[in-house]
Amino acid sequence: MLVSHTPKKGIENLISAWQQLNENIKQDWVVDIYGNGETTYIEQLKSIIKTSNLEEQINIKAPVFGAHKLKVFRDASLFVLPPTFSENFGIVIAEALASYTPVITTKGTPWEGLQTYNCGQWIDIGVEPLAKSLTNLMTKRPETLMEMGGVNGRRLIEKKYSMQAVAKDMLTLYNWILNKTEKPTFIDTL
Image (cartoon, rainbow, N blue to C red; front, side):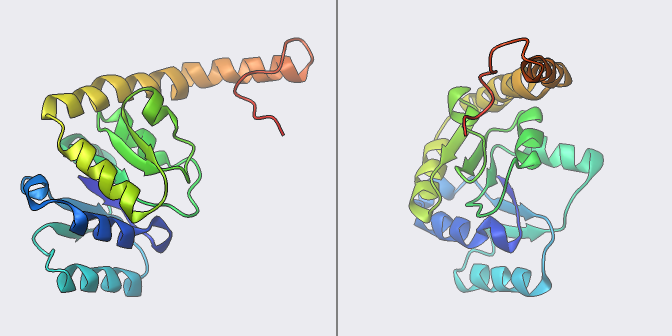
């Protein structure tokens, strides 16, 4: 499992949710937190991890890029963008799904497709929903997680976020703006 971190990402909630999980569920899992952030925040996270005796289960790692980042995503069984308080699209979610990795993120992001396409879980912000989601996905067979990410997640990315899908939506949008068509379904009503 991997996550990224900055203060707005709610890593503390992930640590609290992890503590609530049954030890049998966690026994074959580790949490690798990738990214950078303010030194004081990272030190606070390390302190929480140490105080909670989770040093062998949760690791904070430097950011990764390029081919190494792709390898980290592909090696992960699950990607978590934990309770996020100011995220918008969350490009890392698309990167994880394109790399065949199922995702857990919160409703602070516009990723309801995780539920629709069965490639992860789109949850309420909070420790309890995160613990429940972690338990649900971490108890699935590896083949099920691979299908969620490798088949379903990839299908979501190709259907909604590929260059072809985005170009088609842009053409639909322009035709609507020029009053040539009905309002597209992907436009929110104000």
